[in-house]
Image 1 (cartoon, rainbow, N blue to C red):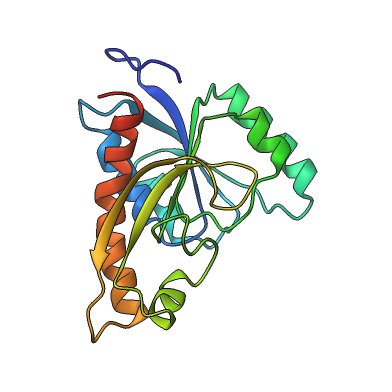
Image 2 (image 1 turned 90 degrees about the vertical axis):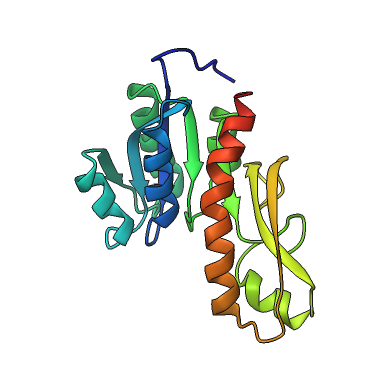
Length: 193
């Protein structure tokens, strides 16, 4: 991993598909002195993504890639990342699976946040599955992205207790609060700060 020293913050791209609450959280974190990252680019596969408003608000470059022709789009995307000298990618609610080739080209520099305690409940509808299986705890995980879905090396996790009256919506809200605490902490850990 690239060292983060003094003012030389690591050029970072955040990939989003939805509301961008984790993106906003990472932007706030990147503005702190102790933060090793600087967000230079926001990538989305969804032009209607609410999170894109943060690009305008914080004056960050944004690009839309539809991933309709995956190989072609990923090649274009890799070129954009290279041209911008991006050294770290943070996936934040990005609903597209990146190819093995893309991940290989960005080895060890793609992070993701997932709303479960991996390796349990990979993929979608995690909170519904957690309730269905009567789990006592759930939480969130920041991990490296590997070619296998939600299977990369775990960096950090946060746990919450499931309450009797919980619904998947209530769990989602509580887990999101933890995600916002966890993502910056995991990045600090990654760079030994």
